[in-house]
Image (cartoon, rainbow, N blue to C red; front, top):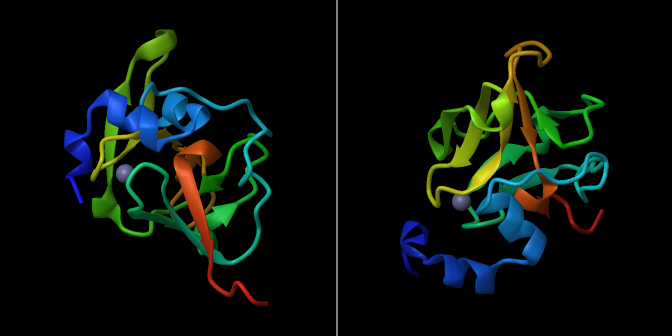
Length: 135
Ligand SMILES: [Zn+2]
């Protein structure tokens, strides 16, 4: 497989749905409470919608009432990149997939214990796999 960082924007467009492309590649934000994983409560793993790298576990997902899937910790800290985002006249912390460089969402310091962090992630940036699909 080709290194996802070397994909052209045209190749990304062919690989992703329109909504995924808008979020992952154009740093868009899906409408709150609209995403398919917002109220997902089953046990499983969340992967990057762009390259399939593991990002979050359902064990750290919680209901933040913000309208997007929220996690208080990462599955593996080396899988994401954290960057300052000054777009839209705000200073926010952007969360990106380290492997493919896609935009995932933002990080806020108002999460629950033990980390105090809230990874506010677009459903469109994620792919979910159930841990126990037959149950
Ligand atoms: Zn990725």
